[in-house]
Each structure stands twice: as structure tokens, then as C-alpha cells.
Image (cartoon, rainbow, N blue to C red; front, side, top):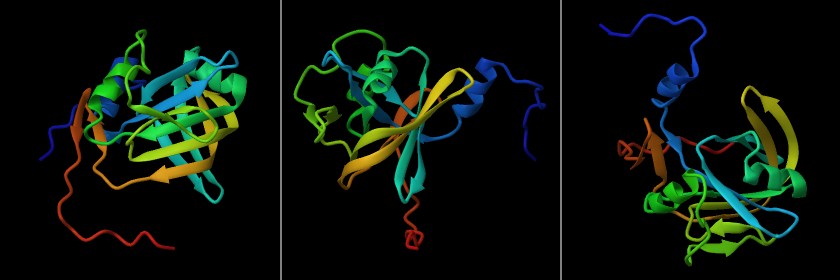
Length: 176
């Protein structure tokens, strides 16, 4: 028998954070370059595939982030989906302040936006639309360029980074 707690009417932000913290998510870094040429970026776990044809992804950022302002100014952003050995980069981009782009862990997407070198996936996106939803601004990006490589993803669960371990089953058919 399950030991679930009682339903809570109108959950507060802390209850929502604790609840959503039970959802295993991937970890990505979204980057943008503002009109002055300054590079900005932040770690996100709110990345989703919205459409395959055309290829559109969705990201959700807190209001007034430097990264969000830069992508609004230019209409472009990049997403790097991180591998299990890139926790240090995820942590660096998850806290405010500091020099995020130090070191040799970055390269440029065709449009000139920095992406994380050796990430599992690198997307270059043009803003396809935006909307305000609750306390976030949601941006939809049309993927105009992409690179992929094999590897294990970095995961995030309950405020901790970790690695995904499959059960060794055959892959589900993902063909159409």
C-alpha cells in the first residue's frame, strides 16, 4: 500500500519544487550572445521537444535573466545537452555571477553562439515564438543546425546530478 500524503489544494512554490524534484530530467546549457557581443548562458532542465517537422524545441527561463534578454534581442540561442561527465559545467552555469566561459570547454555554433564542446547534442535555434507562463518566459526555438554524438546523459533529480542507468532492455521502436 502506498504512503502518499494528502492532496494539497493550490500547492505553494516549495511544494511544487519538491514535487517536480522527483522527475528525472536531462541537463542542458542554453547560451546566447547579446547585441554588444557579450556571451551569456545558464543551466536549464526545462527543455522539451515540441515538433519534429519542423524541428522546434522549448525552453523556459526566469524573467529578466541576461541569457533571456540576449535571446530576445537577437532572436537566436543555442542549447547544449550535457553528458554525464559535464557536471562541473552544469554547476558553473547554474549559479549567478562568475566567468562562465573560461577554459577550453566551448566552441561556436555556425551562427557564432558558444556551445559546450563534447556535449551530447548542440542545437542552434532561431526564436519561433515566446510566451509568458506563470513566473517564466517560454521561448520556442526552430532548430536550424544540430550536431549529435553518442554518450550517457547527465541527469538531475531532487537537486542532485547523476547518471542514467538503463535496465538493459531492447530499445523501443522510435521509427515512424
